[in-house]
Amino acid sequence: MPSVERAAVVTHGHTENVSSAVERLRSVAKSAGVELVEAENDAAADIAIVLGGDGTMLRALTRFLGSGVPVIGVNFGRVGFLTAIPGDELEVGLARVFAGEYRTVELPTLELELNGERHVGVNDAVVASATLGRMIELGYAIGGEDLGVQPCDGMICATPPGSTAYNLSNGGPVLVWGLDAMVVTFVAPHTLHARPLVVGRDVDVVVENRSLDVAAGVLVDGRRLADLAPGAKTTIRLGPERSRLAVLPEQSFFTRYGQVFAPG
Image 1: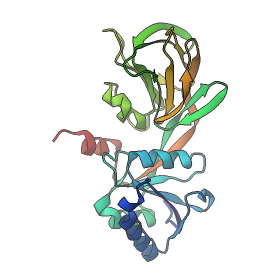
Image 2: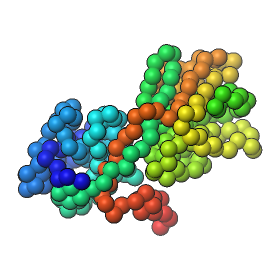
Image 3: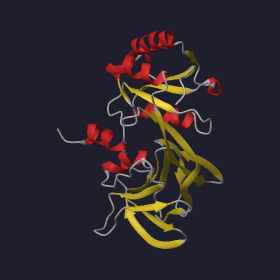
Image 4: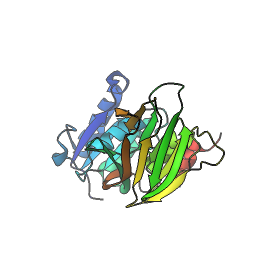
C-alpha cells in the first residue's frame, strides 16, 4: 500500500483510558510526517486509526463505510479480535502502517429493512424477546421458502466478523474472513433440531414475530432500533456495502483466531 499522509483518529468513549495512547500516536505520526485529521473529515484521510476495542472498531467501520478509507485498530479493549496491533506495540505497529505496510480485507455488511426504513450493520442483526425471561415464537423464511415457527429467545444474523461475537457465544459457526455469507443462529431454541444456517448473497431472511402477546426487540450492531410487534416482519440480507478492515501484512484470520480464541 502507498505510505500514509493523513490519518483519522477514533477512540472509545473513555478518553481518560487512552489519553496517553493518543500522545504516543501523535509522536509516531510526527516522526513519520503524517497529519492527523478529525474522524468526521473522512475525505482527507488515507486510513483511520482506532484506539480501543471491538466496539470502537465496529463504530469506525460503520462510520467509514462507503468512503474507501480502511480502518486499523490498536487494541485498548478486552478481546480486540478486529484490531491488528497490541496496545504495547503501538509505536512499532503504526510506524509500519504509516510506511504503507498493511493490507485491507473487504468484509460483507448486513442490510435490514424495518418499518419501511433501511439499516446497515457491520457485525450482526438480532431479533430477540423484548421481555426478559419471556420466550417468543419467530416465523422465518429464507430465500422465499417458509421454514416454520421456532420458539426461542431470539435469532441472530451475523457477518463473518460478527460470527465471532454473539453468534459464537450461542454455538454458531465461525465464518472465515473472505466468505461472502452470513450465518443465521437461534438463541436458546426450544427444540433439539434447530441448527445454524449459512446463507449466501441475494438471499433474504424474513423474520416474523408470531407470538401473540410478546414484542420482539430488533437490534443492529447492538443498537436497539425498535420493537417488532406481534405479526410484524423484518427482512435481513447481505448489503451492497463492504467494510474495509486493515491488518498488518503477515496477519491472517487464522493467526488472529488462534491468538484470541485458542485455549490457554
